[in-house]
Image 1 (spheres, rainbow, N blue to C red):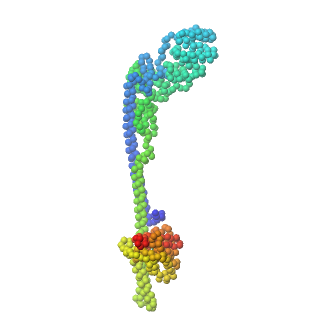
Image 2 (image 1 turned 30 degrees about the vertical axis):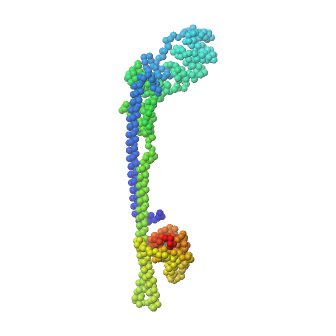
Image 3 (image 1 turned 180 degrees about the vertical axis):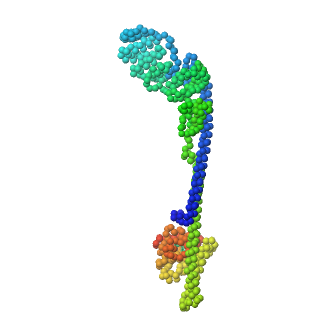
Length: 613
Ligand code: ADP
């Protein structure tokens, strides 16, 4: 990864355009993805609506069928388990389950003659002679007629209470409660006794249990009187009794032979399905939930009456779904069908993961593509810059020897050499400068050939020590004149390498040349050789400025010149190390550099030992 600053180097506009283009493409992709996502959501919405419509049709048909079937079966002897079957006949109303109270007048035993207690009551109320009245009632309670006995016991207890003998009264009531029930003035005797016990605050439990279980056949007035003002009777039983009352009262109004009605009783809806005429009618009272037994999974439904009250199911206020209104279907209610679990955003994303994934991958490709293009542009521009640096550096290298050659030639041609000695010196300089030029040209040609892959190597066995001595020897004269030296150190045993003598010589020469070039003012440069990691290592060491970490890799690239080049003002073209690396690699070796900035550098050529290649 290049340091941040490098990205902002010219060509900056190109990078900005590339960045904007990428941004535009990513935005377009994002927009496209969003549109697809939305479209898919709409389609899913439509699909869900279709599902709900189908479910609504199915539910509507099921309810309709169930209601019709239930109505048609009303005539069957047995009542459905989940409802109460009421029959209206000329004699009154009967029910498949006992009702808390009955709507019609209960005249069952009313016309049976009541035994007379006139004389005793005369004593009790008119003469207010309670003890006498008591003994009178007591004598009557020994009667063989159970109705007369029950009547007498009731009155006995009443007198005892009036006399303040509650305990005795309780015993009498207990007795009455346990005796066989008889109807006195249309009211069962045990009910009267239980009610009296309850009034005396002795026990209300049995009274309410009996009333709750509809033990006695009562009118609404009787029921309410005996129930008293305590806790409310069970809502469902009350509602069923009330519905029976309503059906009974409305029987004359409903002239249709079949019908269905929703009654709201005790805050709960009840469905009444009836068949038959007013005088001979069968009606079924059921809770609407029981009509809807098996419903399709995954949906919510609600049946609403004309006032919007929920007759059955559950109304989901947030979701929208399919509706069948009471008017357009065959249903007596409005049907509302909604999704049980409307799709959440997370579920939708999970469903669309393929789409999202593809877009993410495309964006990723785009970003990667842009990155690589930008990198290529940067490299190209860098190469272009380096090439132009190279041309100017090479021109500069050529200019100095060429100027010297031209100047000395002029002097010689014009015969301006002051002495024979000087002329010899000029010739020697001419020779040196022209061979420097030749080396320069040769070096560049070599590099060109190497780059083109046209360089052919001729490998032969070489002695490492001899190679080092040959190459360093070339620098001897120059160094001596500068008062500097190369120190050699090597393994005493001969080390053989398989190498092209000329190429490996160029590589080593470049390293030594660099070491000398980049450590001006330092008296010594070191070259040593030996075995390292089973390879022959030739190390060139100097005490120059060293190489910063950030440059250590780059300097092996062609045309790259590092900070040492600037700090030491050394001439060069930036191809030396590129050539070294090329050559060493062609020999199956490796070139490494260790350097601590400010202290110097060590370049190591690792070459395979001859015989192991
Ligand atoms: P040139 O020497 O012509 O610049 P090279 O490819 O030989 O090209 O070297 C590349 C760069 O590596 C040099 O410009 C210099 O910055 C750095 N370099 C090479 N050898 C040394 C060294 N011995 N000490 C410090 N820096 C060096």
